[in-house]
Length: 478
Image 1 (spheres, rainbow, N blue to C red):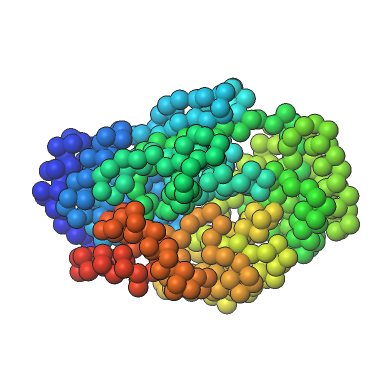
Image 2 (tube, one colour):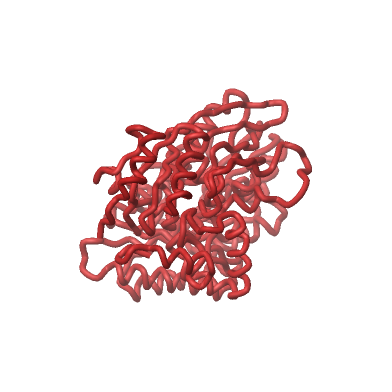
């Protein structure tokens, strides 16, 4: 059901943004979805170009009692950017400038619409990069990385976004502007920056972000190991870590993933293998070469087949092209996919993988597994055809079963995609009611009216959720 736009609200926003306040069917349809399988309907789409315009938009929403939702590139996979309750979308794509690069202090101030990979490309000639590298890094924005505390293959050694954000300029839900964190080594007071990173837009809108610059490593080696049994591949992952080696990245793909990736990118992946590990080491040349030998020795004890070491940067990029295009390659077998994101102990990888296959079979779906093996961050892909009658019910039921299996194995709900709408109602699997009430108290301190991306992350039952739910128009998707 399309909810009618509030004319006065639109007029007030247009007075600030002119033609960059939009309510046409095309824009509303475009901004009603993100990278998940969920969708909603916004009231108005706003395209601000600076902090002052964001401040005025938020203030107008506050005065009208209208919810708002900050949106980056819309690549999120948990429904965090899906509009709920007739909100105003604040799209930050036009706020895409790198404002300042301070090499002495290894910090850069950027706007939230800067794309992840673009930032690293700009920094690379200076000898630096931005370490978090989600698979969507060609199109995902820094603002979205902050919202979801994004990771990526290299977060095993370098950490997720929160480890690389020093300070954030934020427009709070009442329209005031503040800076959370600062550039000093030991900031005073509570770590409000750390609270904001990963809050999924429920505490305000990031308008500038100070990110840490990571030096480009002097030496990089990338290896592809194949195994005839996925169990041996998983055992090798644990054995590498147990040997005292923390690779920059340690990725795993199962047989079905190998087959579709190789058909898609022709990277030379061994399609006869049951599993492959993509391992990257970086650092000083001597340490990197020692690491390569450690991996060879460990893998030999776990029935490794072949070990391929990229001979140059071109081959390295080709191997990574296969990994980072794995999700898109699923289209070779089915037109649609549902991607989950849970974390399990490394020792439980094989156990949970087997359950994922059994769950997919039980619901007549195809499971493809590509994941960050080093930290146990699973990304099971359920491939399907949305034109098939009743398939979405099976997909969502299978997704819930996968989450349940992960939690029962001692895992957690999400490693990097966030909670959003997708896992909002699963929070009780992991957190007690007291835990969630405490989280809601923090959220309410930032946003007493519950206007910032409402009804996300925390399930109904909290004060913010319940008070806002009273104002959701009848028929709105919640």
